[in-house]
Length: 469
Image (cartoon, rainbow, N blue to C red):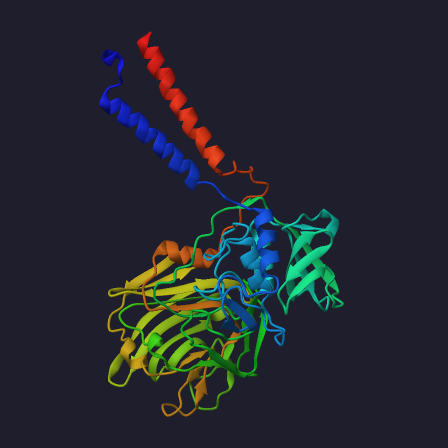
């Protein structure tokens, strides 16, 4: 019989092949959605704080009350999106339906705080909009529009039989809720979604989703204070910060903190829409509006001292020039300047990466220029407040504030590290939607795995028998 045994090399190759095939199979599977598990989670936590322990008292404040504790009855709250995220997701302390919902608010709080962003994510990842609640199944999601203005104000998880559960205060009952909502979006959940690539968190100093507030979602408490003409407009993800330029200036001020003291490396990225070509003159102290003049995206002080990023239109209004520079007393101006084709009012994603040697500019996730950093020195900007949409030149120029932005900014992030090209693509492209009408994946369960193992062993046995004949 020993003469008919497979050589060791052949046996090792067969075993390796089986293992590799199994790992590849499991690694390429989409995440299956367990509707019953989502409903079970919802029924357990409908009147309790979610398993991550946090409850949103408003759109910018997450309070840690402890997972499973009763929701205080005196709180109305804004916890609906967070609650539904935990119901359908994979919160680490207790899993719900099994979908990989992104951490939108911070990396310690699960899922989305914004109802519009959660709905957008669901619809981009296989969720389908239905016309009636009769088309829904337990574990689906209902979104509510209070005023009929097209803005999602609330979300709830559907249990079936016309009942939903939700966190606003708490609700378990009729799907109409007790308010006179004007419009509804019925979302049939997919059986699976592709794995969600996580956004880079290492070195994250500040993150501004601008989802109706100027709150820092990085966990570093670099919250922004809106000053002047500041509003919010539909953005790339949810809402975006809207500023109005020289005619009606506004900006966001972020107090200095150690996490915003950039060292040898820096990455700043954001979605930008420039709405007007008029900026503020730099030729005199009149402060008047001038066509094709500079506008500020962000600055730590201004062009007399510190770090700043400016944009301006070129002749014909078909080119947009960006300038990423540092300057300080006794130090030469250093940085990068580049022009791109641009149509006013169009959203683009801009990333600047500074490492120990180069300054690299990415547009919509693609590298378009790289040059030596030269004498670029972040030390001149330390201990300076961060301004978004304007420069603060108080004490260094004849005007205290200069070059206000006429446009919108969304999903702005600052890192104390140099991100990789793949990380930048993930930020620029967001989570890619799965193809329409995907082939349903084979469910991953113990039975399926055992069948694959038995099939592989049967194949080996057949080969062995053939060799003995």
